Image (cartoon, rainbow, N blue to C red):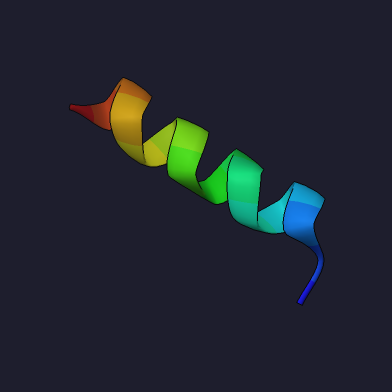
Length: 17
C-alpha cells in the first residue's frame, strides 16, 4: 500500500470529523 494513499485516507478521515 502506498504511504501517500494511506496519509490521504487518514487526512480525509480527520476532515470528516
